[in-house]
Length: 76
Image (cartoon, rainbow, N blue to C red):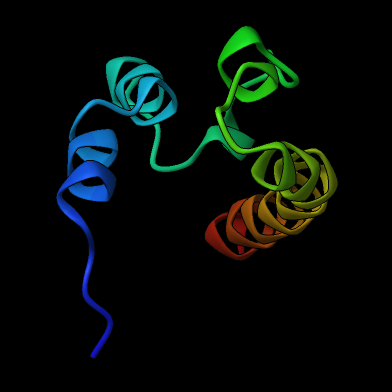
């Protein structure tokens, strides 16, 4: 089992991205139309910024496809 350092735990407790997402009532930031935003662009780990810039559009595409399937199946 992975262990987190106290500094990692502190960052997780004060994550601006998480706070923004929850404040808007979303589950993850791919649901927000403001990507890329200042919170993603200012993330303190450069590799994390790269991953989010690559992953969020992919997640958004998958999420939109799932929403469309739900709408179609609910109208049957």
